[in-house]
Length: 176
Ligand code: S3P
Image (cartoon, rainbow, N blue to C red; front, side, top):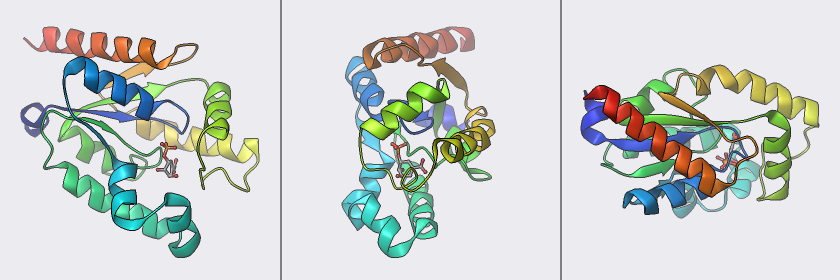
């Protein structure tokens, strides 16, 4: 299966789940390279808030499509994805074809607080808490198609990375 050959670990989840910080720690722990789809897009096109402001969300989502195509070239990396990237038909399956997909899940409240605190996120600007929660609910069924889910509620990034590493090791044991 392509996913096993490529053997990437791909983190998905809502804004504020800690995909970047957990991904960095996990990559160091596993001795792998760390890649972020948002970084791939930013390196080529500039800051995400500017992409949204100048070209709109649809353009950003097309850039995510291109990033997913490029991810197919990766082998044995830890990859953090943007919160909306897997939330299109076929995207989660495209990610599963290139590695093991791990959903960093969690209660909405802490995710929202964290997402508001860190970073400049166009998907939050001008939206009420209720609107963002509706977005979270709409996205959950996409995240739930991941191979593994790790609940981040009440944990720091080190603890989450440790749980992800343990879940990956357990999955590998079961596959043998
Ligand atoms: C987005 C999440 C962001 C970034 C972009 C859109 C989203 O990434 O990709 O602002 O639609 O949820 P994070 O999940 O790292 O905040």
